[in-house]
Amino acid sequence: MYEMKTRVWTLPTRLFHWMLAIGFIGAYVLGEEDDLRNLHFAFGALVGGLALLRLLFGILGPRYSHFRDFHIGWKHQLGYLKNISRPYPFPGHNPAAALVMLAILGIALLTTLTGYITYAGSGTFPGLPLGPEGMEDAHKALANIFLALVIVHLAGILVDTLLHARTGTLASMFSGDKNVEGQAVQLNGFQWFFSLVWIVVPLVLFFLALRLDPAQGGAQEREGTEQHDPSEEED
Image (tube, rainbow, N blue to C red; front, side, top):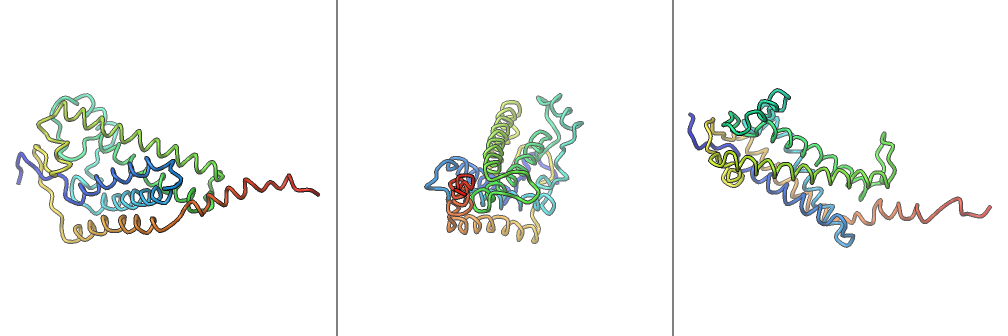
């Protein structure tokens, strides 16, 4: 059944959106706070867990959250930009928003991985020609790319709100409903179960990571390596 007010975003999707926002802001703001390094690490774990399970939800989830509804091809991108001020047949993500969303998920996972290696591991990753300092630089660069994508995402919401205020894109992030013609989504039993896992597992990772002290892991090992210079030893 089609109606003007359409349920586009389910509750788990909306929770994911705001938890990801909180996780990224927390991790980014605390990135240079050495005394709160474990909290920074915990927020990073939250982001990584959310992003990884969101990829699975893109395969297992309902319409609009499913990747088959992500029209990311160049034909769709150009068509959307050429007709950006006109009503468009995309109840879920428009082509530009879908592309940015996928980029955010990818960068989120890479940022989490490089962060883990930097703060809790040895500072290196098999197959990558990056030492500890290079891995840390990569982590910071990815975090800044993440921030840039978030800014693009916010700019897209602003443009959509200005051009299509009646659609209610911003409000849909709270209510789940858009004023568009489309088929309302509902979760089946399995999707509800997966959604529970999707929300709970990242929270568990967050609290487990709080108990870690990444400042005592690879970071201290790197400091010890830097302090010990074999070339200075006497023969």
